[in-house]
Length: 246
Length: 300
Image (cartoon, rainbow over all chains, first blue to last red; front, side, top):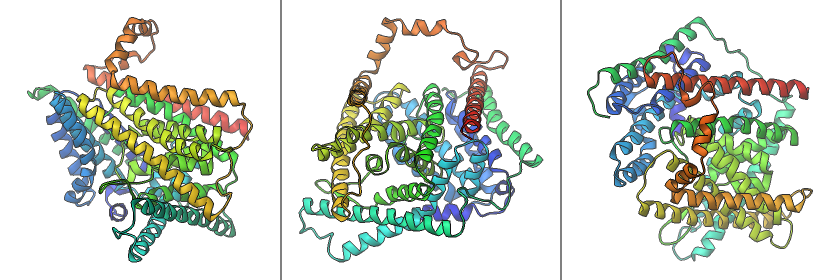
């Protein structure tokens, strides 16, 4: 499954994996802003940035084809809007939508697949994001797979009892699905109480304790400067020299 | 509908990020203050539930099926602040892990779904959830939450200059309406099934606010939904209105240091815009951090 692959990638040991999450997030922000504000010579710029990102993906030891494929998850959605723009007589904007959203998704994927989610969220917390919100996000990520598996078990059990047969009226199937969801809701609610009691039994102090503090080293600063300059320089060069029409 | 990066114009995503950051912080504080720490695992697990609920399909008609979106269900079950925080966490995880929605567009998605969607879903429940109109209130909650967030997203896209032929636009509006009604039906069916398992599980809304205030709030939401609808079907009309009423001239009277997203000293125009944009983001970040510090020291 998608998230399991990300989890495996984020456990690598490349130089990019070892950088401080805050440096990576700041560089990501610069990259996204450079892409979002671009409007001239977009195909050439997109090619240059794609080469840049691909080099980083390969450098981080992540399979290139796999990463390019994952980022393509945005394409079905953007392709619809791109086609709509094209139909409305603005093919350049339609192309821009597809290129920009793909590049942005690939950049986010690069950061997330070189940083494990707990480290990433800790970086966000030291950067000032509300701790309560991040704790909720961390619990959500932790129990996402547990609850999803429970939902899969329930739908398999229902299917093996014949719930997918066509004989049932749509109304009855609707009510059966609502009942299943209600049971899942009540079980999740109950599970949350169990989790909290188990945490209290292990003396949970109200926030997560971490073993190693994040440290912003000189290497991180150098990385931040270089990684922020690269997309800016690429865009400056492309817009200066490209003879492409916008 | 999760907006990816690259769809929104810079002023749109920047403004919505600016709006969403303090709002998410406020929701987090509000949710934290209202409940004990037992709610932290609860909110996380209920967020996971919303993810998992998308695996259970509801038959709609000929060969198609829909699934729960969940904003209104969370709002009815947990209250608006906790539901908003949970939706924020869901959107953040979707943007980071599942490439569903952009990172720069996260503010827009939070405003659409975690703030407008959740509160539009909570209002009917707050108004009529305790009385004889309870079933209708829950249905309206689900419907409004999806309708308001979808219309807000569509309006943001159209303001950003994403063009759509009017046939496509009409079709997507019809699609939104159908999925909104479906969400209302699903929310109602799930809550009724829950109450059959555990009576009193979804409590009655907390009373206390004067009726006039709540009615005004609901009217505002309805007005916004209808207004956005008109605005989105005729975006040029809104621009014309702004020009005619002189809003566009009035805006030029106020001069700010980052007006027009440009800084005087940098070289090429786009570089100036980018630097000004980043400086603006840094400025807002600093202000939010300072406000957060001040609020924290005061509460301790």
